[in-house]
Amino acid sequence: MTPKVPSYNLEAERALLAILLTVPELPRVRAEVAAIVEPSDFSPQGRALYEAIQGQNGAAVDVITTCAYLQERGELERAGGEDWLFKLASKVPEFHLAKNHAQIIAGLGEKRRRHEKAEAAARAILEGREGDAQRVLDSLRADEQPPAGWPWRTLANAYEPRPARQWLVSGLLPIPSVTTAFGLPGGLKTMLLQDLAACVAGGRPWLAPLPDAGKVAPFQVEQAPVLWVDVDNGLDRCERRFAALGRAHELPEDAPLAYVSFPTPPFIAQDAGSVELVLEAIGRAKDAGRVYQEVIEDVADHVRQRSADITVEYDDEGEVLEDA
Image (cartoon, rainbow, N blue to C red):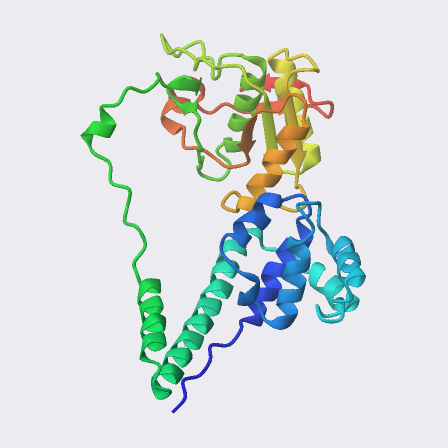
């Protein structure tokens, strides 16, 4: 019985190609995909489109440039045609799955290549070409070698000199770091982090103690530019809060604080493509350097000591009315 040749996963191909068509300014995503898959991993139609996307020499790529690229080379119909490409590009891309889709496609491609090698070895044996068969079998065995193990480290590594730790917020947020914040609904999580963003942008101490808090000191802050990515409250509420907090901390209009509300494409922290978008946004912004996303940090122990039960009210112009 002849073994079945591994098929193509057309859904994974379409999902990956849709991502590559709708992130025109993310060469890093294309590079990461190219490190995983080969053109031969795709179906004939998918290969034509993939080669057109990757063949545009690192330029910004979208469905229009890709159609033009294919048209010039007489391969537009081979890649599915203009209507199909625009339909594909209309899909909402799931950036965080690009690597997964690429691995599925590459895995099937590798199985097909191994199947071809096995068939070549079988033919060589049947035809009495033992040397050729042995070379093919050796190639198959080489492909089965396990990947390198974990990068073990020892106390020798731990004892190596390293620079002193730097803090964005003393004792709480080191530089560099990725910090996830969380807490119960209605617990002033977003307000606390927006206040933190304002304090970092202005170089102000964060969470000054209440009058009856004794000798508790505020968090010392290293001034740095801030980019706030809002995926929760919307532009109106975001601006009202920043207006209130900025005025409360007496920040000038040119304080290095920038914000964006519900960006398109959406920001997904675990997706390399989304992170690339944020990095590009920082690069375009004159003063942007630190990133805060609308995620909530568990700072309950510190908050209870400094600002328990604080609520901030502000009017329609963003003015702080009362601290309670």
